[in-house]
Image (cartoon, rainbow, N blue to C red):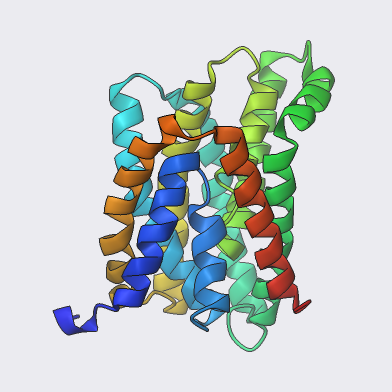
Length: 263
């Protein structure tokens, strides 16, 4: 890869998505992958593979910050990874066997659109979802909570490997239900920390098994996203978070309709 391979349009897209991630804490995979597919006509599996490594690199920085501040529960991270990493590898075997990343890549687009809809509703209704499901797990034993955390990791492993979406909004919501007494900052920090090995394994899997990583595109995205996240993080305290999340949820829903071919 040479400097001339850098695409400034990808960098601009990375900047915009980076600002949104810095403002809301979510939206990286949820926006980047569908943006690459719908706007730049990138092959779905290549968009997913490149975005996974993009997420692994950017969230490594977030993990370092949260870890330094003591905002990561490493036991939760281990439980999630115990489910997500094997699920990721198993998902690759299924993808390869059924050629989901090749001639049937439309399956990936449909899966991505479905997960975007779920993510949008999760962002809009997180409070109600957590309140409703928290009653179901109230009084459950620690062993059961640990088992459900591993199962959550399995679900995230499948979703993220297929679509690169789900580790943020869906993962945080699940952890808020399972660990209601834990501070939100530790929930978010633990979710981000878990996303690093998950997206790294999934991204390397896309590269090794499917050859679905565009390194020049990845570099172009990072050039824009790194300053974008910095800008967004500094603007966040001055803007209403609820309004930002609502706006992002609406955007995700519209992108999902685009991927479904509604317009």
